[in-house]
Image (tube, rainbow, N blue to C red):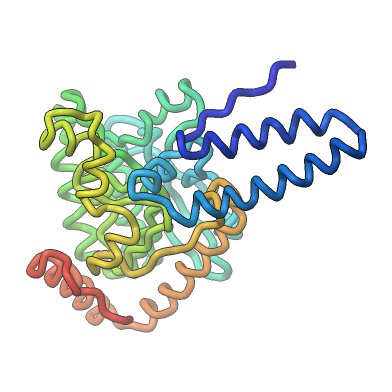
Length: 325
């Protein structure tokens, strides 16, 4: 059987080549081959540490889009004790780009909503490559109202290049659906925690991302525009996305330093896909810690803090606004 071809970012190619050499040598049982394998494995670990300890902004953005990177549905069973998916906007249809429902976080019931991409071409067509349409944001609104009705905390997982920009989405009220979500989340009388697990693109991310606490995985990004879109506008050349990524300052580290994020959640060496269990444990621990702080507040305190959080970001452009909670 032919070996499956892996699609990886260009900076991971040397690691893939070493991995292939190790696999080839593993077919032999000689003592000499065993020594070579051990040497290559040591070389592999050293190279891996060297690469992932010195990532550029563009490389981190490539990791946020990694084809093996975990998506919302991959994390649910690792973070929650149990969960029940719901669907439909009760108006038009089901949008595969957004999933949501109820879940048990240890002994606490929560509502969750998250973007969902696909692994294969067929899955991505079903889920529109994680770019939600109006019905996806209207479904999210249903979940927000459910959280309000039953006073359940709301957890959102952000991973989208942006909301679907097609004319059919605009005809069905894309801008209004996102705007209504932003308004509702700003007034929701329950704790809201948003976790950027991959891409955090534009209004598509903000449509489920107005939160009391914004947490970003180490190799995620959050931006008003993609590097490719920025390069196409500013440089008239989308191929200059690497230069745009450096200029935009949109990686987790940049967003945290600007004060727009509340915490960077660490990933294992090699990215979230290297160990989904460890990544999920880090996410869960961060969610629980922030949730304990937020549930200790009265509704009035919660809403006041949320209002001030975004007011200060708006007034100061995100500079030096983060406060210790």
